[in-house]
Length: 108
Image: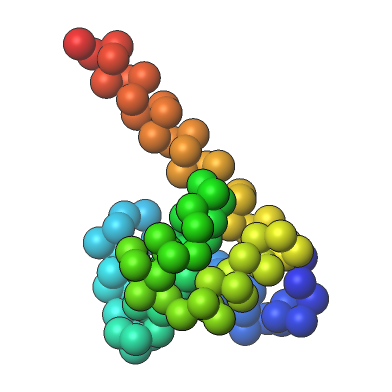
């Protein structure tokens, strides 16, 4: 965990985020909390991280996301030397998709 950001205000923020249950609730909360450019920047970094984690090259990432090479490099540094937060999220998202796919096969 990165102790640079840990404090009671950030704990309160994360507690609020963890209380959200649906994508619609997330839209409402983040539209109230952040500016549109802040939300777009975070979502862009997440897509960049996902593309890097699936071994996409910078030129493909720039073309798909419009991210600068500086942003891509910063995200890549987080993937390689960060706290593995991206990996944790992607692994859980992949597991959820696999579970949903398996459930769909069982209902057919």
